[in-house]
Amino acid sequence: MIPLTHFLVVGACLFAIGLYAVLARRNAILVLVGIELMINAAILNLVAFGRYDKTMYGGQVFALFAIVLAAAAVAVALAIILNVYKFYRSVNPEDIKNLKD
Amino acid sequence: MNITALVFYVFATLAIGSALLLVSMRNIARSLFLFFIVLFSVAGLYVFALADFVAITQILVYVGGVLILMLFAFMLSNKELLNDLQIGTSHFFALPAWQSLVIAVSFLAILVYTSLQLGADEPGWIAASREAGTVLTPTDQTIQHIGVQIMTRYLLPFEIVSVLLMMALIGAAHLTRKEATS
Figure 1 (cartoon, rainbow over the protein chains, first blue to last red):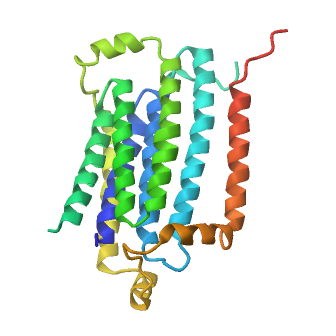
Figure 2: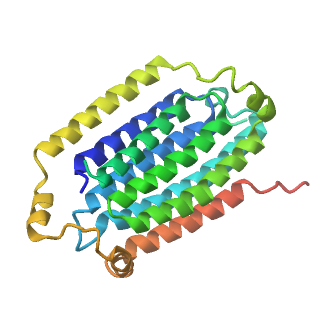
Figure 3: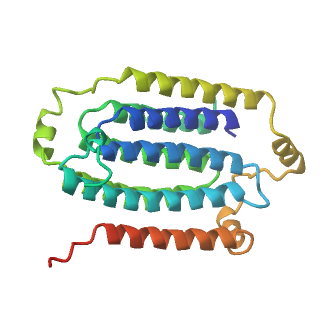
């Protein structure tokens, strides 16, 4: 049986990589991928702790809810990205400066 | 080292390595396809945490839905897709932005330090669960129990999540609709 700490360290690595992608990349879609990496790291932690919860299955059930929330977030974010691209002809977050036209 | 641990570390290195390659690659199409590999290997890690149903859901929802959506959005939003694919090999790695690197590495240090602390002294409920014998074992029927729990104990969060998912999908459809030409 794999120790809990190993799951947590893998999750920490994925979270840090996702954070780097969010901060450093110049493309809104890759920023979104970074957010998804961070959500995946969080789900990995939920599932790893959920192994010790045989009576209520809280970790696994809330991991499922987190996956659903991430899918909803992606749908809305991609719709916004496509609208922004239609307006600015760019998906670089640094080009998007105005709140209202 | 037994075969289970070996496969776990193979999946872990696959996930972390392709995630690192993903953030350092200049070509976005290649990064998105590397994201496939990350998601698949993270699903493999879920199996090692004895959450088969979450792993299957991860593959269905992320690989089948989210990633395809991302590829669509990328192809609809990049004028220089073809140029990008052709010159992608000459600039294999993007320049690291060192400020972001510093923040990410310090975050990683804090998280790893905390995880190692947790290994040293376990939370009380984990020790209690280990004593009471309620730790999941590989032979347990998890899927059946998850279904029962969702329909009884977690019914309210389940309903809230489904309403929120419907709201988000309606919102996405509303955002991307064509403006009526007047």
